[in-house]
Image (cartoon, rainbow, N blue to C red; front, side, top):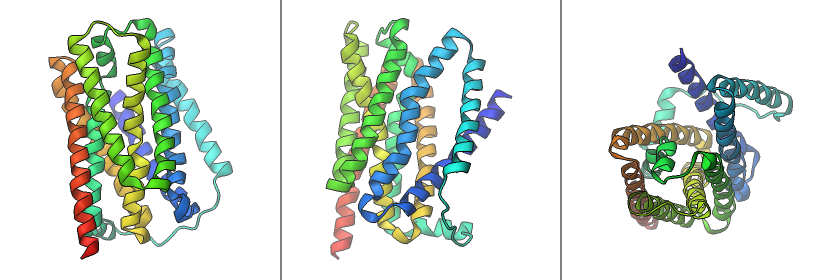
Amino acid sequence: MLVVTRVAAAACAAAYTPNAGAVAAALAGPQTRARALAVVIGGLTLATALGVPIGHAVSASLSWRASLALVGVMSFVAAAGVFLLMPSVPTGMVVTLRRRLAVLRRPRVLLVLPLTILGMAACYTPYAFTLDVLDALRVPDSALTFMLFAYGAGAFVGNYVSGRGTDRVGPVAILAGTYGLMAVSLGILAWFASEQPAETSLLLAFLMACWGASSWAQSPAQQHRLISSAPEEASLVVALNSSCIYLGMSIGTAIGGQLVGHGAVVPLACGGGLAGLAFTYLLVTTARLQTSLSN
């Protein structure tokens, strides 16, 4: 029953997220599109910043059932808020599956989209086993909630900076900095877990915040790139990007599940390596896109 309801909850989230992104893109003009997408994704990052440590605290003090019940109550509140406050957005024609898949034949979309999978796999290879990571870093139980909050706070800041930065300097520069930061922060965490004694809480919290910031700074910039590659199909590419986000999460979690048995250091190192691969893929595909445009 727990697995069935987990799948149902994930399906609902997957249906909600691309619609929210498409509405944001429709309501905002081209000059503020990335910022509007960042606001929507900011809801996810704020939930990470507050929801994960709150859920951990409720589970620790009451039970995991109480934590899930709290999620259910908040979901009803969110549904009521959307029903009462959501502006009316005209819907387009019904889009067939063939038309959805046809977008994937566009060279620009086909080059940009895999980066979403690779980037999300990089950050989620260790993320699904965060408690194992914190245990390997010798973080005491009393500081676990603080470390989870640091990750979430970094995620919120990273998403905000990504939205504003993409509108100002473009998505490629933001993504390059994002994957560089992710590779460095995960690499240092892996080194600390394998070689160093327990570090100060503030240093580890800073690295957790960098991990969170780099993980959640991807989406606004990447969605902006995809919408720019097919502006007339904005809602379709946002939906495809959301599917790739969940696919990347699944791949990263599967990789982490295979590696965590060898110690929490290995998923951290693998995540850092995948982030470096994402950085390389970004540079190579950007050069190819620029060459195709010039031709």
